[in-house]
Amino acid sequence: TRADSLAFLRNIRDCRTLSTKLHDPFGRGSSYIWESYFYNFLSDPLKRDDLLAQAFSIFRSDNNKKGLANALFFKAEMRAGISTDSARIIAYDSSVLFAREAGDTKREAQSLRAIADIHCSQGNYTLAIQELHHILALQKKNGDNRTHFTTDVLAVAYARNNNHKEALRYAISSIDYSRKNNDTGLIVTFYQRLGYIYSDMYNYDKSYYYFERALSSYMPSKPALVRDVTISIITGMANCLIKQGKYQEASRLLSDYLKKYPVDDLKSLDFL
Image (cartoon, rainbow, N blue to C red; front, side, top):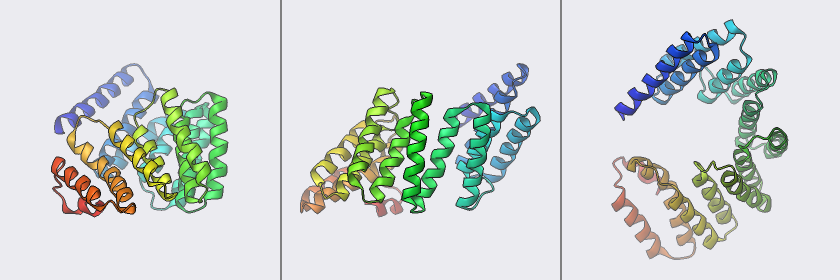
């Protein structure tokens, strides 16, 4: 909402003011990154790029390696002035180098994972899997508690490479690690992943079960968010029913969903 947006901007600017008073260039530069990310969300590339440039200027003046690693990571994430995968990989690679110099092992792993994710999207599954195993070992060595994001990408890479046994292994690991580390904010994604993998294996009962788990695990406060996220989950559940010849059940499921969350934009129906 507009009120939430204004509050977010106010908090960012308050942090910037405090960082300036404390002579903390990392905090001040980081505030520009977050504001840049906010304007990227609003699809305002001019404002985004101007704010990101200010972050880079602050970090370079202070020779702040950790800040530069973060700025390069978000530059690649937002595709700020970047139009190709190869350019994004260069930015992520640079982020890795600065993160290593700064001793920021979490940002190093995050940037390396982003590179592996690009390789996976390009269909280079063997390379992506190799990279992800290296990242996972690095995270375990450094005590990084965000391994569930790496195992999730591993599950995707193995599934796309038609190795469903390993895909299941790492998809289940993502759920286990997220619970162990008390970081279950995206567990809905991990349940969905299992739903898709079992569907690819023609095990529609288990696929339906995990889509259902995904649906029950996603409970945000805003109905609009529920609608947007659950479209893909409901589609997966309906597909399981259709594949088993349960057409009336699938129809009821979709009808009930549309009654609960009416679709304003007809393009949204393309998912269903």
